[in-house]
Image (cartoon, rainbow, N blue to C red; front, top):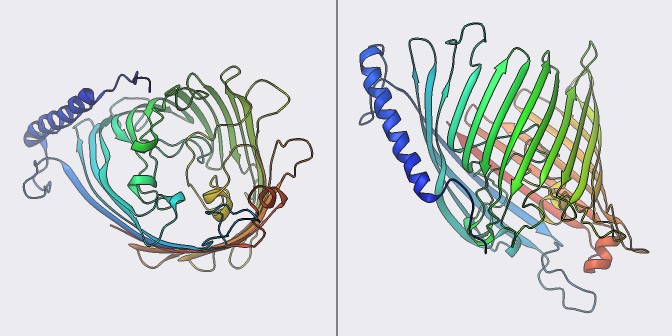
Length: 453
């Protein structure tokens, strides 16, 4: 494996830790002279800072029937085609802010995540595994109203282990890998990048961000993915956002050669342009360019309509295409899904069965029809129908992957507890039947509880 070329080596991460402690100490010393008398500090921690403690915990039960895990063939024993497992996570976090007389703020955050997968879990989700590792560990500064004429928080800088998200999660959302030896394949409690340097400038309706990010991969599958990029967004009122992003990736050429040197161009638009705001549209386009190693595109279009009636149903249709490798060319056109993540049901883990467990955002075309409702202030629920097709196939091979129907419900029990429920079924298409021999309907269910304060 080629040695990492990252400028942020372990000694520099130790230097970052020292810098955080020095910054907090210096801020505290200054704060002791200027802070209000009633500023509260937890016992044993420096005074003069606004401290916040958070704690998150989750537990989820997952059950599959007629799964693809054993990948059986018609002439082979089927084995156990059902899987049941549990996942749990804990995340304590401590953050601090110091506000100067000019209203600018220094801030920092420290958190850790413990995850466990247990209970006859299939190898796909990592088997029985557990871990506890550092999550957030960053410091930053935001301008507040200290820069006259530029507006509140016109400038913001962050360095350390932190999250960074782009749009609605199509290609850049999740900074850490899950499952494997870490556990928590579905829970996805880890989302911070191993190293992030983020600068943000916001003036009026314009937002410009520059960023450098290092992916926190699984130890057993470390691609050394790093990227630098520039993002621009323009907001028109509260209902329209236009965005464009350029990113350049590097990676271990022995593990992900198509990603090492990859240039990515992304355009997106989210808008409800008409007066009643009931009709909305989403458009996104991605171009990946790395010569013959990778030359691919992806795009999607969504139209939605919000009905003004009981339960406030919203009906939407989305078509998405992720290019596959054309067997007639020498170049690689197989789209790299990059660092997608979960931003909403039906977003970019496409399908609670297919997208979570056996298809990826590459060589895939999908049709999505969704109905989302809000029966009460505390309950939202909906149905999502999917049709999955292969973009590229060899001559004569089938392209029908699966049809799937998902039901989901989120219940906010109170300000601290949320319960989520999923029931899904998928009918394998000819492509799945030919490749794996599976003809039975896939069944899936999930119960997930989350606590936060």
